[in-house]
Image 1: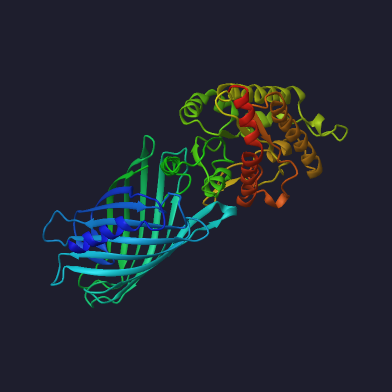
Image 2: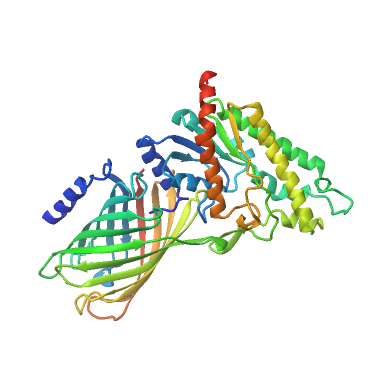
Length: 244
Length: 266
């Protein structure tokens, strides 16, 4: 808990480069049929996955400067206490490139995982995200890459590369988000298998669009069905609030 | 990060930038302001991060519908006190299928380009556009000046608007011309030129008659054929040029209009 508090305090004091105040960006609750994290099967048949993102300038829409900071809290919570719960808090510093669709970022994250002898671990990560468009066919997508180094529990590296694609329009109350990624890691031999996942969420905007409900599903394919790594198809529902 | 067409994202940008004290604008319009597949005119203006823009545009909208539903924009103009209202409208009124299919006369080599337009049908559209633009200005102009753009000479092609590789609408003009055996590209362009000039005349006349309420951006002869993505939409680089024309109008022409409005007690 002290580690989480330290990150939150650090976040609240990172204002040297802009006069910005912390602002809630998004809050989201997914309830899914399988708890999957980096190719690790946390259990099932039901998992709650809440996520809250708070921005301090920069992300996603505030205006000051070419840098931003955000704080993300997310969790994988099983109602079945035999399964494994996982909590994370991450502080991210973003540097925007030509626009806000293109950035690089550095993060520090704390993980609490009620598994094994060392529940807390620290991770540092770098990531990059961009935007690709194919004008003639009206196609837009966002490729991303992330490399994270665990400093305590695994003392290993996790790398992920993927692409996000969202289909929709202002005057249509539905939108569809598709993500495809592949990842590799050199975590412990029995967990953290390389995996690839395809997920699709269909979301309906309610009222002004700030509140959304959705259904989704996907397939997570691990390199080997051993230990805590299993290939799974999953489905879920989503409740999301985008704060203005 | 949400896509720029996401209405919640637009609202969020507006609120946060307004909170930061940036100059407020309101935009209303069609796909030039709301083209989801790529960066459109308002996206480009928004990307400058100079303004807080409350956005009402919907791709495919007509000035006829915008006028009919102008109350919500008028309410926002009264509540938000923007510097001005940015407007893109009229193109969809002209290319709507039930109209464009009646517009052209069967090809006759003895006729001029203008004579290939059914005079009565075209005049009724000109009248409708003029009336709707005037009504829209009446609804809003007292509270904030309107800046609208004319169109450049578009190029009839077989290309429609595509989303994710699927054609969702268009082409709009060329099929109607082909149906009347107007196949010569020079003649097609000459007919389009007549139509675009007439449309620009409507806006130019409004600017002359109502200089405190209406500003017009003339885009004719701005774009090359290769700047057009399809018959009625520019590529993103073209939309950026239009965005810059709006920004130039805001920076260089709007202050004088605002001062004149103030002097006139508006």
